[in-house]
Image (tube, rainbow over all chains, first blue to last red; front, side, top):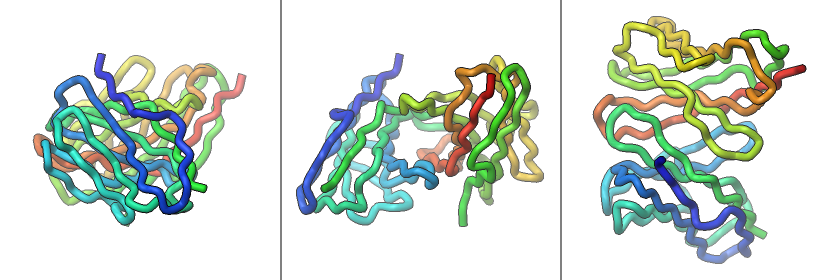
Length: 112
Length: 116
């Protein structure tokens, strides 16, 4: 079974902190994605990566950056956390081509 | 402009009845894929069904079928014989550019509640 693992299920951080959300997949997938999910807004794409060291901005990249140094790991970085970044963050991965994406369990981030 | 539109924020269905969840999409790419995911209250995203833009037949997976109307750009999910465990959020998604690394865009979701 494909496994996508996010490092934390729940996280509480202070405003202004630098926050790292880690995601690891074990199926050698080329594509990896970071979404945030908010009530009434669905899943919005923050960044995705289709190869090591490659990244593309999604719909809402402002305030976020990403890192993909190894194929299996895709990190989301909040350079200076703000309260409006309180959300559920979902990581996903897929092979290239027209196939489904597999999701991690999500990280519920609260910025206080 | 939204690429994926789900117009039903919430729906109710009686147990054992069928229900249709609406999804329309917007793309100028001739090659794309459409997906439906289920998200129960536990939060996990569960892949349900896929339809490719060049597929001639509507996709089916057990009690799930996808009513694909290409000219209307709609990809409605039909759940037959609803069960209490079907109560969840349902998301429609699209990937543009078959064979490419294209990203996966989601709609806002529909909350389905199955009544006993």
